Image 1 (spheres, rainbow, N blue to C red):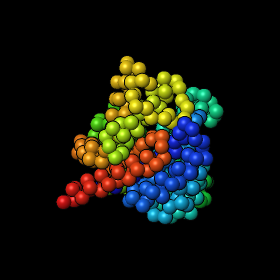
Image 2 (cartoon, rainbow, N blue to C red; image 1 turned 120 degrees about the vertical axis):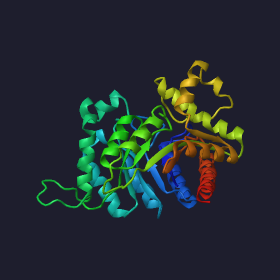
Image 3 (cartoon, one colour; image 1 turned 180 degrees about the vertical axis):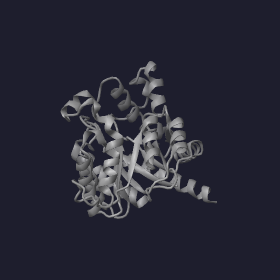
Image 4 (cartoon, one colour; image 1 turned 120 degrees about the horizontal axis):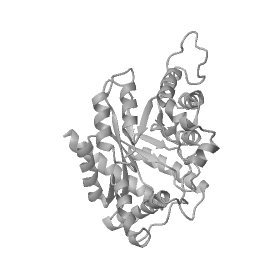
Length: 333
């Protein structure tokens, strides 16, 4: 079972965007050395705590810093862009870094109504999502004689497309096109079980895949002790609470007691949204990852972790990689 990294290029309190981008580069090199299969970056807008807004630019930067690991978008919010423009961007990346670039596609705008207005989007843009996916497949496929428009670069590169989602809609789109499907279970797990079942049941084999390929997203806050892992998680808990209550800002410092910063009445909402999480010391994280894999039967796991301290974040992904290697060995036995 392959395991991968999802990075939002977090900007911690006390740091700036330049430091966040340097940290992303360092984490990518570290992840490649640890055996991670993919390194994905996500499109978000108007958020001080996330530095991956120009996603294709950052993908190129990370691909240039690494040698063998796949690098891609997890994802590009397709309603924000013309399919031709995305095909040219990722066709260029695939030409520069052959057989290493992935393109995950989401249907959300990656921001609020103000962001949608700034991006010149109309509400109905997301309604064209299946048609836009089909158009992208054409741009990355063999050149079609007589086609009025082709993607150069892009045509013939065969950039792999993934469908991302947190609802049943994305599962149906991925199944219809016979594409791999990544579920955003790290922050919106409500429909996880049903979406994975629908995707597998309705999957139609394609030139891309002959059987379903389901990716599970998991938050990981791993440390040398359970107590430290729990403390690291408080940064993400605070950030999620702020986002859901109309706030934003940079990634907060961790705290010793989460009850001091998140009201008791709000904890169930935060805990439910972030329940697909492994947190604690090495053995605890190993056991929690093993349980998640056994329950949801993913073909691939992608790990993310909004951790304030860069050194602690590097260590967390190191511990998680060891746990997943051990899990793979037990599955192969």
